[in-house]
Structure formats: structure tokens, C-alpha cells
Length: 332
Image (cartoon, rainbow, N blue to C red):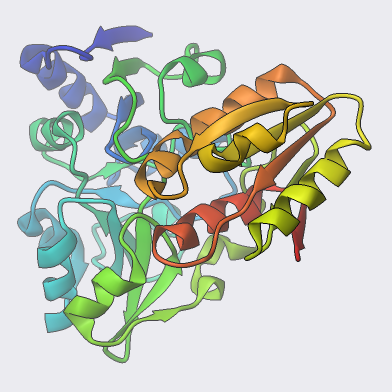
């Protein structure tokens, strides 16, 4: 394994070398603006199969392709509509994945034998340079063992991947912390298959209409984000009721961890509290969400109890991840 530190300065010469190896089917871990990715040449079936094996990913779960230009999008897809171009113009580069009809050049393994492919242009210099220098789209799911939370800082990756990846690039903590919004246009309406940083309101400004349908995502029936410790998500529009319920649950366990918004931390004095950030700054909450979950998991307590948030704007994406993660959900 070759390690490259780009936390302070991006080394273009080294990135060019790594990109060439990616093009030739080697495996690299690198940052995007959302989470860390594990990637290889997305047009090489054998290389993509290695990604599935390393992540222990179900072959029924497609992998998206990272691109660095609309020209590259057009080289791997076909029949792009005017609305799809408008969405790419609005949200590329950024935390936005668009499901498009694939060209034959895209191997079937990456699409789980479907005729569509998820395409994203990351807003991260390291990612974009790797794609540019490799001159191929990079198949790049999140750098985590399937079923575990995504990773936003390199230290949380090394245990699982240090001996499995050919190259690891450290770009520091990722900027956003939650995976991209996934959208598929059906009958000229953008359907959100997975909520993310790009919100329904932002999409509606481009497309007039927007719908949410998680059931259209191929991986919908697969397990995601399972922790090694039991976890409960609690939400109420009435903050006092939520706090009271969490304290009641926490008393039942010898060692409880409570993941709380900053405003409420003071109400859990008898327990180990992880401050998720202010509910008035959900950008910060989302950025730290997976690293806070990793921190909680490492403590190896009896239970993790997490405060919920209203499912609007970025709260929709945060709750989507927490609902996937937690064993139980209580809404009062």
C-alpha cells in the first residue's frame, strides 16, 4: 500500500502516477467532498469486481461513476434530456448523483445488469484531478465495509482497508459528511431516490416539480449502516418530550451514550454525551454525523440513543441516515 498525504498540499506528480495505476485497474482510497471513496477504473470489469470483494458489497447494489466533465458524462451515457442537462448544469460539480441511461461501454457489473448508471462530478480537487489524469470515469462507492457507516476522515478507514487498497490518499476531513443526493428523472419529474446535501427545495427551483421515492433505489432492500452497538433514534416536535423520553430510556442501561444537539446536551448530565452540533447549523451536524457515530461505536457502551430532527431541508438527509442506522425508532 502506498500512502500519499495531501492534507496541506496536493502533489500533482504523485496524483498523476496514482491515476495511471487506477486506469490500469489498481484500487485507491481518496477523499471527495462528501465521504471518502474507494475507486478504480469504472470501465474495467475485473477491477470493479475487486471493489465489490474488498467492500463485501452485494453485487445487486450498483456503483456510481465519478466524472470530471459533461463530455465524459456523454461518453458513458445516452439519451440525456433537457431537464437532465439542466440538473447537471445546476449541481455539477457537487454532492449530486444523476441516474442516466448507460452506453454499452459501461460494464454490466457496475450497474447490476440494469440499463442505467449513476453519475456524479465531485467538488473536490483531489477527486477531479485523479479522474482527469486517469482519463476514465472512476467507479467509487464510499470507502467502508458494506453495512457500516460511511467514512469522513482517514483514520477511521485504515483498520479496514490499509492492506486491501493499493493507494491511500489523505485529504483531511471531508467537507460535507453525508453522501450525495441521488436523483432519477421519470416523465420529466426528478425523483429523489436518496436524500442528501442537495435538498428537494433546491431541485424544485430547477425543475418546478420534485418527488421523493426511496423505493426506486436498487439497494433499498439491502442493509445499510449497521452499528455494533444497539441504537435508538428518538424524535418529537416537542423538545421537552423528546428529552424526557431519552432520559427514561437511558436509565434502563448501565452505560448509555446520548448523541444530542448542542442546545440539549445539558439535559443529559448523568450520561456520556456526544455533541452533534447545533440544530440551527445542520451543515455542521451532517459533516460530523458519521465521525460521531464512529466515536460512539468505539466506546462500546450498552446503548446509543440519538436525538432526531424534523425531516425538512437537510434534516431529511440526516434522518434518512439515522433511520437506516438505528435498530429502533421512537416518534412521540
